[in-house]
Image 1 (cartoon, rainbow, N blue to C red):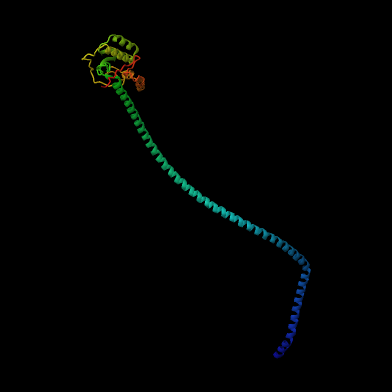
Image 2 (tube, helix red, strand yellow):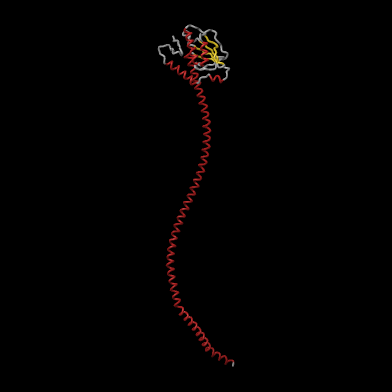
Length: 321
């Protein structure tokens, strides 16, 4: 029985399988048919959609081509910009280096300027010191020159005009070259200035009218004129044969050599320097007197015996044998 059942099952199984397969195929056919119907129904819509997509794709392709072109142009511009940027950066770096070099040079120049300023200050100090020293030297040289001119004038008066001045208790005026026979013979006059008044201390040889001359001197304070007149008086006295006395008035102090007869000084050495300066003639006046006498000396005739007329000075030079 069991065997028969197995045989029945074996006999039924292919049929069953075929039926099951048929049912399966039918189901699949229906499904595919439904799918086909759905696809057929959706195909026009899909076709329109695909066409739209194709058109969009074509437009997108055109846009993409334009974008690629723009991109290439942008890339070219970017390259140019980058090149310009690179050049600018290089230029900036060169400018920075140049600025750094210039700053270094400026600092060096500042140090150099400071050094030069220090040297300039040092040189200015040296120049100032040298200028002061030069000014002192010029002052000393001028004083030496003035003293030389004064001594030259003194020497000239002593040598040519035979005139000397000595200071002491009074002022002693000594004239020589008055006497042709004895040119070295001295004619002396001593006056004193005190309390704003002149007084006669000694006159060798004595002369008439000297008191009136002293009074006129006190009125006019014209010592130049007084000395000139006294020289003329001594010349007249020498011409008349009056001789100086052997014992003359002696000064109470050492003699002081003066410059010329035009020099008016205080007759008392003990008086203050203020009074001395009051009666002192400047160097220009001394030089003027010397030049005046030189001019008068040159203007005389060569044939004469070096006489000076016009009421000023008369000099008789003794000719050598």
